[in-house]
Image 1 (cartoon, rainbow, N blue to C red):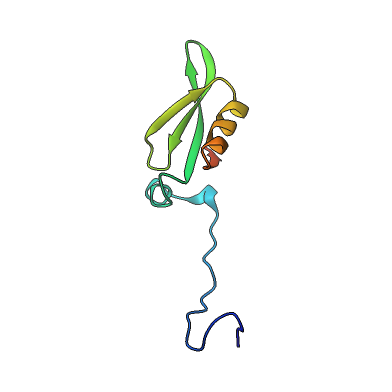
Image 2 (cartoon, helix red, strand yellow):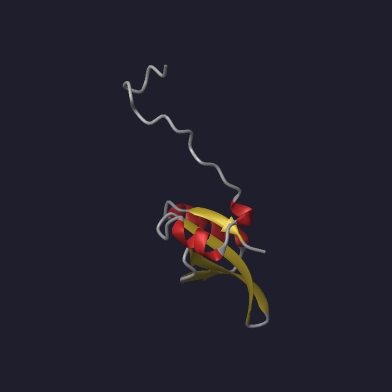
Amino acid sequence: MNVNQPDGADTAAPVTFDIRHLSETQLAQLGVSQLAYVRPIQMNGETAFAIHAADGTPMAVATTLELAAAAITQHDMLAALVH
């Protein structure tokens, strides 16, 4: 018996998954406001890093991966690198 759950309460284990194997649809379903992904792009002949919401909506472009990750963290989001 789980002492933290009242009798008859749902005690299902949380679902775990590997974010590296999510489809585009699954990624979008995780929550636009909580997850962003970073993708390297070419901009004016230089490598830059595009930041997108989980549904693919472009949000920003950063000059470095570190800057992209910092911007995502500053907005209380989780980052995923797409390569």
